[in-house]
Image (tube, rainbow, N blue to C red; front, side, top):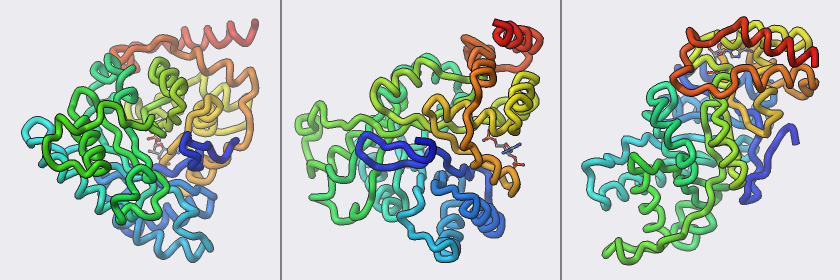
Amino acid sequence: NYYNTVLHNDVLIPNIGFGTYKIKGKEIILKVLEASLSANYRSIDTAAVYRNENDIGLALQTLLPKFNLKRSDVFLTSKLISECIDRHNDPLDQCMRNVVGKLKMVLNDFDIEIIHDYELTPTRRPKILMQTAGHVSGAARFYQRSDLEDEDPWKKDKKIFGVSIHPIYGGWFAFRAVIIIKNHICENLEEKIPKSCSIVPHVNQIEFHPLYKQEELVTYCKSKGIYVQAYSSLGTTTHENFLLNHPVVKEVARLESKSEAQVLLKWALQQGIGVLPKSTNTSHIEENNQLDFSLSDKGNMALPPLFPNLTPSLLDPAWIDIDRAVDLNQELRNQ
Ligand code: A2P
């Protein structure tokens, strides 16, 4: 439905979450979280590298009672710093200790934990991400708490947690580490690690907007029942305000009587993809969670073919032919 998606382990995840990247400082965090809870966001996305986890925790302690909410009413996501594994130098048992230690620290506070391979975001390494797109989520593994709870009391009351890994850069270690916890194997790792003991990942968070549709990856995830969450739905991470100011987006917004941001967010939601808009502006925070409308066929049709078959090398706005995009959309409307 519009509000939530049921993950394949029956956990409900809100389709709209509040992103907090680069939002820092106790007062600001308190202000934006107050605005977001008041605007009915029930999912908050952070990460260790955002360096705002503590302030988010403190703000929620104040705000949850104020909004008459329980901790379990809010879906909290964080991400381990992938550097907690020195994948090139640490021996496996060290990697394992690092990951297990971090998970123990954070799992009391979060519903999902993802290993944050932020080096691999499209902004930084577009080619690698593209080349391996089919595998990024394919090799990732998430674990359900129920798989591990028998052995480890510290995982109590968690809905799910996960470790997402990357095939090239050795998140693989983390994968094995979690298996090791499960099976309490401390020696002779190679021999005792089961070959296939993974659970299909529940969520894959990727950059996703009309300039970067990652079709192959999205199709793959959907075929496996993996819920895709978009970050940077407004395209600002790689393109600043290019999309928000794009004539086609503006035209669709006008047709729909919505803001450009709402059109872009709805464009993702209508494809079954969750969004994590971030903002420090109270009215943006509100409008970004007012998406209970449908892009009409006209508006919706105008967007998907906006820039077909873009490859990362074409992500540079200089390559994009705005006039051509406008013509294309005009042609579509006339059909
Ligand atoms: P602001 O804090 O002024 O709202 P992305 O999700 O692609 O990373 O985009 C985040 C950026 O987009 C932020 O800089 C934010 O700025 C801006 N933004 C968020 N919501 C809106 C909106 N509804 N309209 C315009 N800009 C927005």
